[in-house]
Image (tube, rainbow, N blue to C red):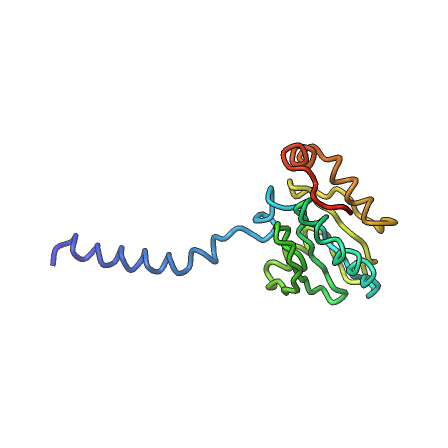
Length: 163
């Protein structure tokens, strides 16, 4: 057997092994996948009083879709749920994130057990833009609508919602 004929099967086996391991090992983290695609809005349910905010957000699907909001909820137990993907379909969901993705979200928000209920808004760049308990969602929409990238979006595609 020549040296080349022994090396080729070894390289093929190595390539096969890497193709199985690579996608999970090299996949970008959850937060990086959101960057420049959507504006994450995280509802931190620190004391179990976030139901009112969840109802308001559920009623605002069109406004969230228009603003490409990716709504996540962090429960008092630290579990993270994706509630709205930020797509044009305006589909509400309740998908629990795996621990790796949940950890990315908790780290980005700076979550710790016992946090008070709050909304945390991030821009398309992934940077925090707002944290608190606004009087209404209009505060959030207004803040987003003043952002330069949102203004460009509105110039290209007028708002279709009558919120």
